[in-house]
Image 1 (cartoon, rainbow, N blue to C red):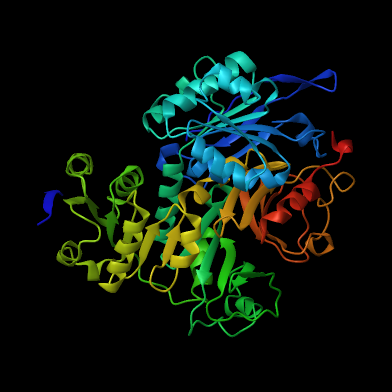
Image 2 (image 1 turned 45 degrees about the horizontal axis):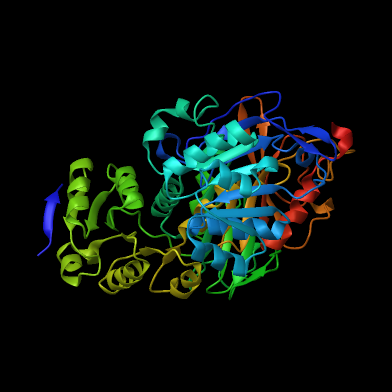
Length: 530
């Protein structure tokens, strides 16, 4: 019988230059005026680090292609490191991955065109072997906070690497941000994938109809993926009917995926049952748009979190004051820790696949069953069991992306791959142009970007022009614009006659990742601007 036990911070800085490298016989300065908000500020985020690195590489920020590939060292070939490498290699970057396990490196090198180095990335000799002498960016994402911090300090002190990003899993560092400054560990940006995943799940709890829910512009704009179901008004009707149905709500259907194939919709595109529809609207209005594609579920009130590890504990802490939360963990010591540190959640020791336990805890009355153990097979089986026993909605955390598409169906409502959710936090640092945030969509197949547009009509291909005048690649959609007006910001859903102005924040949806480079090039500013 199960035992019942109890009821990123980002570091901004400015300096004239934060490093130089000898390129082509002369020094190239890299000014580093940074701005943005961290991924774990007060435990909340908008789905990734909303950051831009103004002038991270001077040749990249001038709006022209760099003369040489960007040299990036990734420490750690686990789920996060491998996903980062997989995303960056096709973009003509010079990637070196460092890890202590030879098998991981060999498997990675068999799939991707990159260099590998076997060793501890915190050691100067290993960093030098990896090319730290002329490296542009260090991404330390090993499973050890200590290794990541030591590597950043070494990279700064011995090699002067301009930008250093560290994965920090412990929340302790959030309380002492001074430890990350140049005098200490010299971390330019810290990310916590576990917190990013937690924030992502919280949004799905708040909007239970969504497959994916992300926000831009500090939460002003939401992009939501919804599965169209029979009986919803817009199903069987063209996209243009959305405006007829909601004349007071400005919204945009950014993309449709039908049987896993992308469709760039226009007003005549008819939405079919089973379509995965990406809708963009002001956050305050997004539920009204979702209602046209499927019946709105009742708000979530009761949750079971299966697995009290790092993510499970963070999620329980974030939700216990707003929902009736129960946590299940198989390890007695961990369950006692959870019971002692969660003041309003009920904690049970037991297996997530225990039918007797789930039935005893009224699984049929649960609004959301969330499987977050370290064993993805248990997550899949637990979610399937919970669904069969009557849980209204189930989510399974799955590390292997190949499994995600296989299991996300009518029986498992949502399957998430943590590495793909958190990768946008890193991609914002290597995108050309003034990129505020990047979100990886559909398990890495697509992206949504928030960019700031600079220049004027003579130096920019976008500024001063109507959207229907822009020669954007097919598959690229400008969904919304956020424009500053004095002390407030206005959300403008993009239509053909919308004119882009300087300093607009533009939300761009890209249906396939191979279009990202073209988008970056399109929004780069000509040299005359500077």
